[in-house]
Length: 98
Image (cartoon, rainbow, N blue to C red):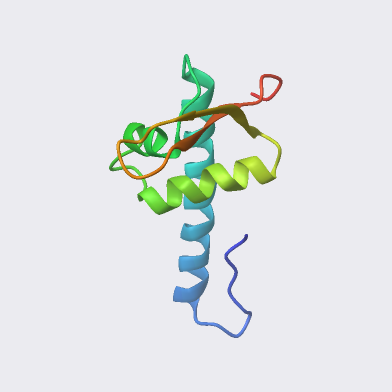
């Protein structure tokens, strides 16, 4: 997903689109870095915990999903209990992707 502004939009819309686009890239990079550095598969909530204050929990979960769709992150095949109602899938960065 790319944030875009129409040619007829005011300059503030173009500025907002540029900021949104850089936030998406930054959050994806941060999630990928965390998964590369992790010594074990992580749940979305664990990734959110590492990035707390940098991005919203929603942005972190969306970034992980975007990375999965791009083939950079994959389901580790395991689940962890989250301490809530259901178990959570765990995620890893693909080994051949830096």
